[in-house]
Image (cartoon, rainbow, N blue to C red; front, side, top):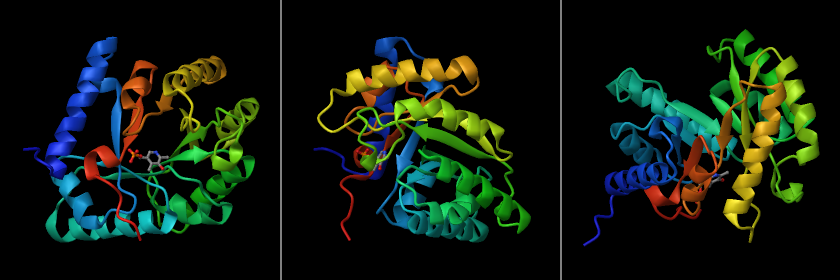
Length: 245
Ligand SMILES: *Cc1c(COP(=O)(O)O)cnc(C)c1O
């Protein structure tokens, strides 16, 4: 019998990560597991919180904001977080007009791929700090790279990364963490992640602290870990298929 609960699937995912690390001689502590809760209700977030998860990813601004605030409300009433704050990250394509809202709740944004988003998030951070809707003075930024040049699916061209990185560096409230990518459809994920790793090395010549690589999902986390990922974003393996709505 397969034990098909969030707890058992979460444990199985931790085991997968540990094994993937062991296979390539990486330290487990170098990899953050972000649980992607998009389309899943707050009850499932609460179950993850009870299992110790505090790192969450979402791809729609309104849905993410609602869950982040609902969780804070539950925590105020029942101390579900036990004093360890949850961190919510925006990982999906972001519209410029959502930047002010995202800056209120996001710990980091993994899908920054344009000058207009960098400027929008910087302005949104300034506003959120000014009006008191945010305490943390910094927002982590991952530049999303389009590895096949099809920027319609999100991601900047490789040739634009250096300029975006400089712009993030020049901002007051954005902190460049590193790169993010989703492998192109039909691409060999190992080839894609190896290339992303090379781009990360290039980025680090001018931005040595930007060491993070956000790569790997349910289907390709082993390949991502083998190629230097420091943050895997996992939904389906832990929460099952996303409810449709
Ligand atoms: C939905 C999503 C994930 C999680 O994908 P799974 O295959 O369910 O693990 C990871 N990254 C991004 C950008 C996503 O939109």
